Every structure is written in structure tokens, then in C-alpha cells.
Image (cartoon, rainbow, N blue to C red; front, side, top):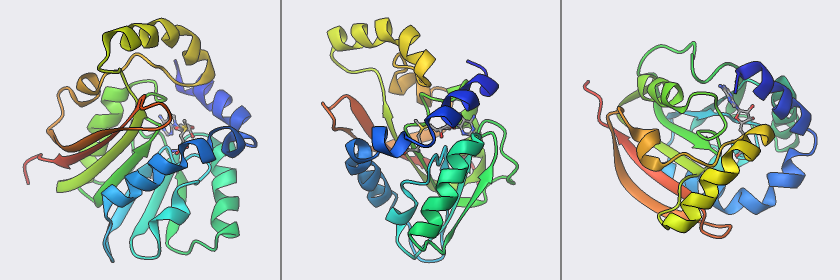
Length: 207
Ligand SMILES: C[S@@+](CC[C@H](N)C(=O)[O-])C[C@H]1O[C@@H](n2cnc3c(N)ncnc32)[C@H](O)[C@@H]1O
């Protein structure tokens, strides 16, 4: 799916996104932020920040930059920042597959429900690795291919349909990490239904 079409889909979701996908995915979002374990003074990048729903979860310590391509979602993120009095975050409109940040400028990166939403997840991962410091942390929470082959078959069948809704269901963790220098340090399934994965990686690119 191309980026313009994806933007139209997420612009259309923007006003109702939190009602549809807010509470049901909040547990894994909080767990992802906890795993990220951002310390005072660290710079965190959240790619595909959406409505900014996770921004209040980081607490006051790190400085968080959120990027998203959908202006509609970013407008909601600005409202969220104001409503929660978040003072340590800023949001920018940017294609996460071609980010305007220098190499190795973030200590930690978070991507919640994004790797399956971008047009090219390999390009996204390459960019995340590029802007993350060597040894930095990358935490991903996403719907990925299940280990159970029957469920994985169903996910593959559904993917052409869900792509019209703004995400795919046929990606495996192996495909997401292929060709990257990322080392998985922790992985677990998360609710609802244990069909989503929470993955913590260390960026093992050379210094
Ligand atoms: C399913 S939403 C996830 C939003 C949020 N992270 C959350 O926890 O709910 C996917 C988000 O990724 C954004 N997105 C998709 N492709 C993108 C890209 N190439 N660059 C920036 N944002 C992108 C969409 O606009 C949307 O806001």
C-alpha cells in the first residue's frame, strides 16, 4: 500500500482511533514503555506515534519525539499532549521510512502497532536502526505471525482484507528483523488473545 493511501486511512480513523484501539491495546503499550526503560536525559523516538496515546506513559524523565505521517493523527496527538500536560514530548510529521534525523541520535525507539502498518517494514526497520545509537534499545509491539501454524495460516488469509483497514497480518518476526543488526533480548506474546508480540531488541550495529 502506498503512503498517500495509508495517510487517507489513518486521517479517517483519527477522531475515533482511541475509542476503537485505545483501551484494548493500552496494556501492551504500557508494557512496551516499561521495557524501553528510558532514563532521565535520554532521547526516545516513537515512530508512528498516532494519536499520541502512549506519550503520557513515559513519565517526565526522557525527552520523547513522536513522528507520524498522518496529519489527522498528529492533530489528535497535539490535543493529547495538551490535555495531559505532557511537557517532555514533541511531534513531527515525517515518513518513518525516510526520517530527517542524523544517524545514531536516539537512545531508544518504540514502535507500537506500526511495523505492520507501514508500506515497507524493512525500510522502516533500517531507518530505526540508523537513527538509534549503537547498543541502543528498540521495542516493538505488533500483530505478527503466530507460532501456531493454523493461526498463522488464518492470518495470511486475512491479510489482503486487513490491508484495506490500514495494516497487514502476514508479517513474521523473522521477516521484520531480517537483514538488521538487531539482537532480540526479550520477547513475549501479549493480549488480546496472545496474538500480538512485544519484542525488545538491542541495536548491535557497529559504533
Ligand atoms: C495502527 S496506528 C498505531 C498508532 C500508535 N502507535 C498506537 O499505539 O496506537 C499506525 C500509525 O502508523 C502511522 N504510519 C504508517 N506508516 C507510516 C510512515 N511511513 N511514517 C510515519 N507514520 C506512519 C499511521 O499514520 C498511524 O498513525
